[in-house]
Image (cartoon, rainbow, N blue to C red; front, side, top):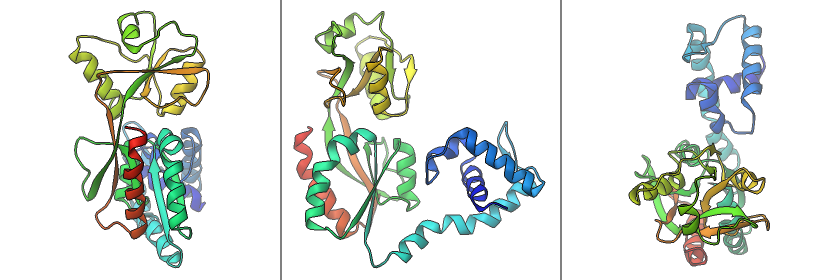
Length: 286
């Protein structure tokens, strides 16, 4: 039995399917690779581990999950125990937050706590919050959720305005003008359920306007790439685009995206210092 294949099976069984498990994998891997390695595990064991549609563990799959769960579920705690002499700070955030909001603040943090090892993980909001709850991350810096997840504390950091991202040569000069004449434009957005998408659509509906996305992408960095390639107009935050070939048109009088830090109730001294610095630096983005 390949232990790596067993680990993949553990995550699939824990989260109820391959696609649902992907955001929680501790390393990057694509769905086809997971599927092929699970199939190989079934061949090695000569049993079927789960039904595919709908997902359901077989009797053999239940037995294997119960066997593997104690080991893999305790790996994060064991990793921390083995690293007691070195303090770690594991931060999760969206790609744009990591790129635009964290560098300067982390620089100040490192000056005061140079011995603390920092790791950064990029993902969507829901998986990051789940990783904080399961002790795989110390803090998630993400858009505010309607309800604070169980067992987590919320610390507000910054409110960031929304914007429409367009190619530099796009004829629209303001977001208001574009909203009035978007009939020929495709909208590119993060999926429904993400606070950014929901804020934009709710405000449009309040104004009696409709513009549903034709392309949905998991992260704002990819969104910018699609806009630059001429695929449409993107809904994003009002921060400078990464590419000089793009412009951000501020969505004035739209609700701002509130970003907060979510962490377990007992914050370490290192995390307390980082939160203090982030809150002090928030005025750069408000």
